[in-house]
Each structure stands twice: as structure tokens, then as C-alpha cells.
Image 1 (cartoon, chains in turn brown, green):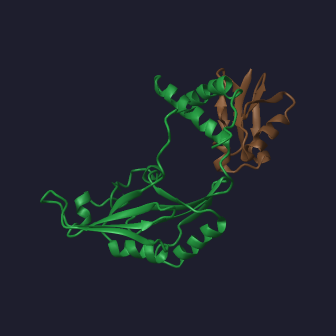
Image 2 (spheres, one colour; image 1 turned 60 degrees about the vertical axis):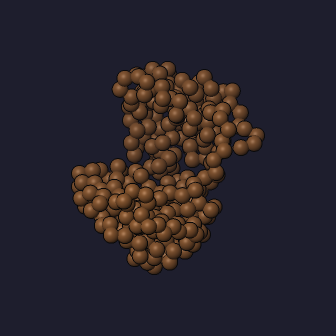
Image 3 (cartoon, chains in turn red, yellow; image 1 turned 135 degrees about the vertical axis):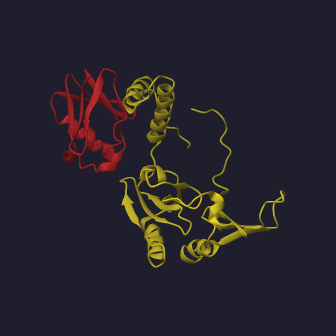
Length: 82
Length: 211
């Protein structure tokens, strides 16, 4: 299981929305956070979100233990089972 | 979160030394239009080797103030050798990375884009034009260096801060303290600890009715 958390503020909603486009990904909520989870990798395409660098590089609030960010660059955010 | 009553009321003043009081007055009073609101002319200050000085204050809005010390007879050398980077107070060698040199700075708040652009116009017509204007998506700022080399920012919020951002900030700080208590803190360990705190605490969180 892979999971990451993104705070629900206007700049971040596109991150959760783009992540949810993958049928293997489930987006739920815990309080004011999106919980984005999948059995395998979660990949978010940066350009599809429309985020520029300040929001993009600070959009991750938490990464569940057992998951790890393996890519977070101008192209994509990738979280995989550790 | 702290249960202590929060009684403070913003910045009374923040103070910096200057060796260029004329430039400093031109920059803050004449270019930016910050009123002079207070000054102290002091013959020494107790100890015999303390120079005579002028301590002068400019209003930065909200009755908050930026203040300078000008010491008669003092030259920049009292602060050490000239640096390749930094300002008259903090001097750094050429190898010190820019992120560190710029980390300590003063940002003054304005309410709107119109106000930000007004200060941009004033600076651009002066000897200290805006060096960069950046939108960080949630804030927009203009930057220059004042006559003393102090990194100077004016900023506006592009939207109000939401209550959940206060929660997130507190979870970040608690997670940071936890990972600092353990060996070799890293950003990855912070995000892992913060995920645990989100699961523990975010579900039951309610925005405060009165902020």
C-alpha cells in the first residue's frame, strides 16, 4: 500500500484531481487533507496539474510509512512502496 | 498547540546599523515614503568607548517601525572585513551559497497588487530599482537591496491564509521536533512522521470559529 497526504488548499486541488485520474488510485479525505493511496505506485504528472514550482515542490504534506517518494522533479511526483 | 495567552502585538521595531544614513533616509523616507516617526540623539551610551549615535525610526505601517543606528566616527570596518556577499552587518565570503545569504530578510506587507505595484514604481524610479518580482502562487513579492545591502522585500498575499494551513503548520512543527529527537533527521523522515500525525489528528480537527 502506498499513501500520501496533500493539504486541501486551492493550489493543491489539481494534484489530487490528477492523481485520481488513475483508476488504481483512490482519493479520500482525512480532515482537511486528501489521502491519495494505491496498492502500487502513485504518479502525478506535474504539467497536468498546472502547478508551478513553489506549489509543486511543497504540495506533499505527508508520506505514509512504508511508502517513499522516488521522484519529485519538474516532470512528476512518484510515490512507491518503500 | 500552545495554551498560553497570546498577548504580543506585532513588531515594535527592528533595528539595523547603517554607515550610510543619507542613503538610508533617501531610500526609506524619500523613495518609499515611510514617515520618520522617532529619533534618539545620544551622546554615547554609558560605556566610555560607546560612540555618539543617532537612532532613527521609519513607520512601516500598522505603527510598526524599522530603525537604524548611525554611529558617528564609525566605519564599516567595525563590523569586520568587507565581505564578497551580504550586507554591512553580515559579511560573507564568495563561497557562501546565495540561499544562505538571502535567508535572513525583512518582508513588509501590502494589501493589494495595486499597492505592490505602487512601491515597485517608486523603487524603479530610484537608485534602488526592483531586482526581481516573483509570484510564488500564493504570495507575490518585489525585492531589492537597501543602501546598506539589506535584502528588502515587499509582499502581498494572493489569497487569505486558510484555517487548515494553521493545522498543517502545527503538524509540521510537531513532526519536525519528533525527527530532530531521532538520529539523522531528513525531509523524508519528516514527511513520514507528519503522515502519522495527519492520521492521528486531522480527522477530528475542526476550524476554530473565532480566529
